[in-house]
Image 1 (tube, rainbow, N blue to C red):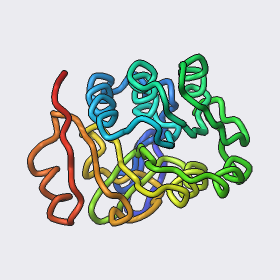
Image 2: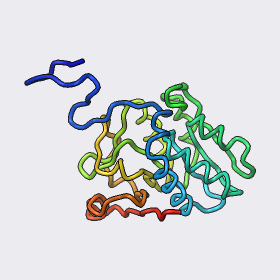
Image 3: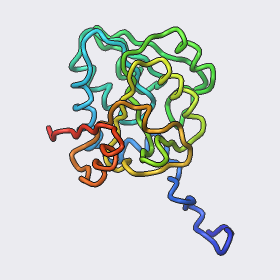
Length: 214
């Protein structure tokens, strides 16, 4: 039940220095679901018909895919997520591009270097980037190193990166750092975000858009 650490012991289900314990895609889908819906509805307002957008394998991206399906009639969506691919597979007017790669059943998505090969040939207007945590000091962070390979290539292929994250992610550091906050153009979050959470990012020059409850 405990593991030895320098100066004492800690619970086996705890993580050092505030890093989050890994939770699977299916588990995360159940967390903060209403907030993710809010964020997805707001994010859709930043998309124009005819654009090329990238959606990563996060649960908020899946919510955004559902909004896109009902709202847009001419759009290209690039993703490494099987869940998003299944959601958009029969969407009229949506051109769907899958990265391919090695399938991870816990994340319901494809990863590895193989998943990034196509991204060097695609020009993306907007990457909607999900995250396990985003803070001023540590930037954008994730639970697993595996996530970073695809996320970085998505970012390189995109003209703009918008972080879509419910307010529970703001000011939080997860295990693995991807990049600094200066590499994103905007954060979209839900209406439960506290004023002090938002102020910290705006003082650092990162605009924060708060969703309106629908």
